[in-house]
Length: 227
Image (cartoon, rainbow, N blue to C red; front, side, top):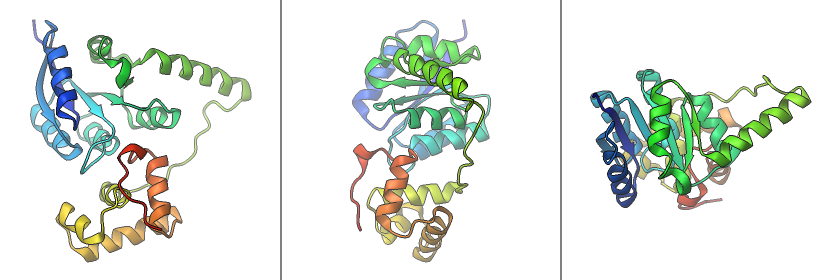
């Protein structure tokens, strides 16, 4: 029997070890790789071509949302299951808009993760029970209000702009951002200016608040807000 190949993208080693042990104990699932940040996750997904990527949202260097977007764009056959400590509607909606196949809350993921992986491999979607109930409720309420199908056009940011935005929100100075991304300080400044113009936000604190609200970075991993 061919096993379902899974890539784990999670920055906490203890969590990765627990997930790996859980999944490798299943007869039909095999963890073929582990990534501790979003950039490595993208590289490994391209090289290993797993059937499923289990992706944390809050990761260093490149967050799970942007990593998800890039992986699904480059390898649309790969299924993405997102793990998060948060179950806010904004996070869930953002993830599904990117094309992910499911969303699991970390606190309840352990006993349902293998079933979730099997479900998305077959083309289905899978949510933690609490999220599933809330999505159904929200859909019914939107239908009753005649709001279903209405969409707000998102602001288009390039992948590099998202990377710069994340590092700004994590409190990195221009030089640190330039070193991290291996680009010049002048290029960082251009991306920062472009972000401010596109988002109509003109200070670092505002960019940081936007990054948190948009799910680019979780508030729990925010380092510094500079006014």
